[in-house]
Image (cartoon, rainbow, N blue to C red; front, side, top):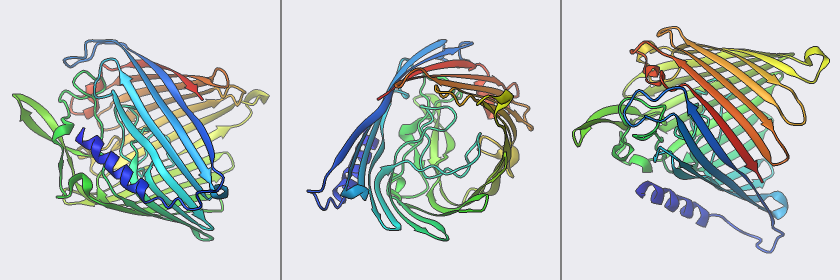
Length: 403
């Protein structure tokens, strides 16, 4: 609860700073968002204690309240999130995904509050997406993020967009609880997290980014200095039980993302250099996507994807991809129901771990969407951290209601 109160205090402090001038100006209001029911079926019971179930039910809601005034120069967005999970109490949680005010003045944009900022161009792994913390209990693939308190000033010029970020509060990563699936043999005790900085979660982080489009290139270059979003883990005995406690170190990270659009080709690269007291390394994710348009004289498109993830630390890497190959195919029907299918496979060249991902989605009506996701793991090498997922093959169905 203390962490939630800290976020609330940060949000209220930022809200009090909003210069709501011209209060008599016309204000426009919109309400949107979604609610979902999620059903998951596992092929086997889990390999660890308290994972003796093969089905799981979860519900979530994410409304969005949007105000706009001053002819669109000022806007305010509030987007809370809440999930309830049948088995994992750590997955039953709430968050403020966005609580932010935006002011536009010519070529300047000013944002303050809790926001989500995405960086990246690759399909299977986003190395450069460092601003927001991962909400790993809400999504296994790391795509879901926690809201990040920040001040962001953006300047649009003929030479690109220059962004400055002051990140005024750190969010700890979420992890599956004792009864959760898709976790390791040792529980992560988030209540005993440690920090390299004496300021702990109050440490102020900074980031600067330049992005620009030149010819068929979309470019992004950034520098980040602050608390690493990816924790290290330290074993500790608590009440006679060994648990893992997260340790958040201080890092400096420089990164680049490049996408080149050449006819039917999309060439993609994400690369980082990271330095800390613990280590110093380079890592990259790169590849391409080639799209066949109008298959058999229809509106359907098929895209073929190939990516490679590399980390110079090899087996000592704490990241997902240290020597991994990704293959995929994306089918988009371009019909009135937005029907889409993605099939992706990964292969770890060091540990010979394999996985298969299938994602399908279709709009049922103006307000309803159905999505299906399948995950299959083959990780027999116990030296690979992914071996803990070997009994977690699953099929997940989501029914979403947009409003």
